[in-house]
Length: 407
Ligand SMILES: NC(=O)c1ccc[n+]([C@@H]2O[C@H](COP(=O)([O-])OP(=O)(O)OC[C@H]3O[C@@H](n4cnc5c(N)ncnc54)[C@H](O)[C@@H]3O)[C@@H](O)[C@H]2O)c1
Ligand SMILES: [Zn+2]
Ligand SMILES: [Zn+2]
Image 1: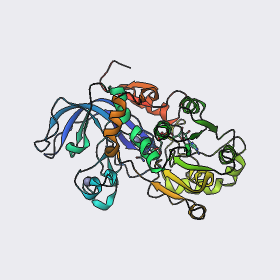
Image 2: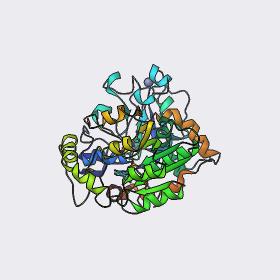
Image 3: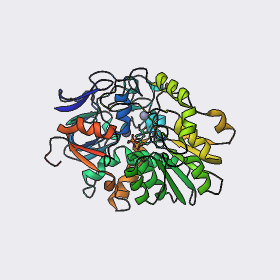
Image 4: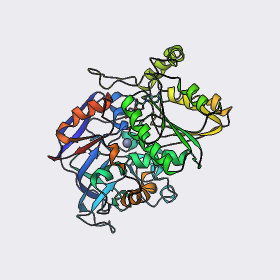
């Protein structure tokens, strides 16, 4: 089968690889009908999240049809349409039973303390082959597959695999109460779903911060009040728009590849931080292989941490869903502590939210498809990766269709 294979930092390829096989009675094999590219995949290729093994298939988003099931899977049948949650869980440990699927004790072969297991990730995350492929092996299939009703299309369901649950998780962690003011840093796909989810939770006002006009336009079309950090100082603007108070909640949907402003009134402050930011980048990403403008790490890993803490009202809540690697130690702890902030964060417990979100899409409460802006054949995946990596205008979320003539 064809799959996107990680070779090295700055080197991914579409290749022919062996088909997956059932290894445990609780496994299933799914034929993938839609996959996608996530901002998390970019961190691995840029070198800002290390530990990827050469030969690992990338990707952690997919929708498909069950092709084979192990004899231990009692709730699924061959031929059923399913969405695959990005993180892998067992469904019976104390963490899974409490809804912390991303901290499952059994899914990660490196042991209970190794942390979140997910497809297409580094060795410490289990080294599982990913979902940017024609087929995939799904462990603990009784809990890691969610059936899809006929009314939910593949185009809708692919957004349920990772980014809608992650945006919803971000809004949930942010403790949003009706009327609250919420700032979402980052208007990539995850930020857009955080905005949509904050609306579902009755936020009073939502502010969206980025520097890319096409992404800010989409945020504005969702009803967010937009701030371009290359034109305005985001902290000052948030303060000014909230009567000097700051916002009740911040959702960080950027992560380690954050950039600092190079234009506008906030650039001078960022310039003063240049040496510190560049030390952070060196420490987080000692190996980098940028090529022709691609796979360039962000230049300010802690920029969003600094802005979030400053922009929050006293006793506000910071929700961090942007991904930071375990090697990142740059958080402004003192400033946060002295404002009595609540800080919540983590990898999404996708499986916890999926049934509710599938139903919201099925009953028409929310149609996520307007946030897919590009559909690509798996054959063109490397070009699609490059366009998404450099955030070309219009490349917000890329759906990949294996073996198709659709795109
Ligand atoms: N916690 C989870 O389970 C989970 C799941 C999926 C994705 N993620 C993470 O969410 C983050 C976003 O993913 P994505 O697919 O939307 O990626 P993306 O790279 O497309 O989006 C990031 C956006 O942040 C903007 N940005 C950069 N610096 C900024 C700054 N200083 N202030 C405001 N905006 C800034 C960029 O212009 C871009 O639009 C990534 O870190 C990804 O790894 C986390
Ligand atoms: Zn993801
Ligand atoms: Zn578990």
